[in-house]
Image 1: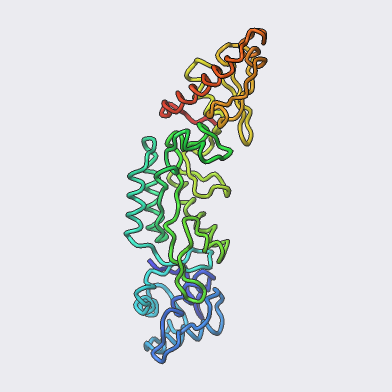
Image 2: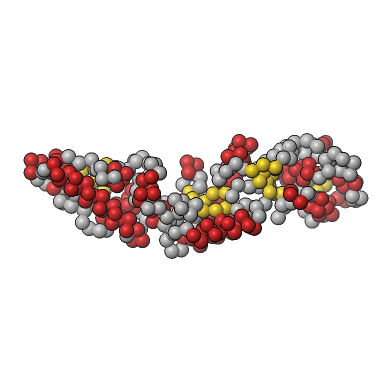
Length: 348
């Protein structure tokens, strides 16, 4: 629904986003004599050009009296502005505090996002949170969201490894059905000159190029609604990602999960990436064996010396074949953790 937060004109508060929206509406409406009512790029500044455009529109439609010179929600001027918009520009929107006008998404795009959610794999209770986010974002802002139902929902350990990120297999909430990447079905933007354009892609790249503050505002609006449903972002480095709960250590949660098996003792040195320690099941010294990615690949950092430390035996009693044996044993621990993903619990 196209809305204003306050009036625009002689008696209006003339908030920049409200002025921008009225300018864009008058820019889209052609006068009976030919030119547009607001024949300039919208800029959010109320001045003589905007004042003249409002008054010309009202004069052509016989609007006078107390509302002359001002646009307010619910007035005759507002209703006629909405009616006069061309069909392809119905549903103009702007977010408070931003400067780029966009068009409300269709019901079909909303349904597309909901269908993707239905096909995604999550832990019980997580999908309804995402569904509430999709619904509320559309109702409040006319923006359609969609979750990446493939590698942006539940991920296998291999899926996580394939990303080649600092977050390794077993360290992401995606591996436990409690993380999701939620993108925008790219909205149609009304550029400052009135030309319609797509917002580039799922990361709203054209919107970012037009105005960085508006690009961030779209994500911030999503995040505010998400947090109301117990979904939390992790920062500007990965804007699509949302998870539940918020304060989780991927490394500490993972070793708690591994230790719950009880065969091998694990610990972690936190970092980017994390480095894991283990006693190899021998009850001796905890030795560093590498990152989650290395262990998953069967390439744990092991030598006859470190194996001897972990097992509490002299290195000369460890054979070269033991290196591959223990690499496989550590990889099998990760396989167990993946198979028992529903037993994983978050740790701060």
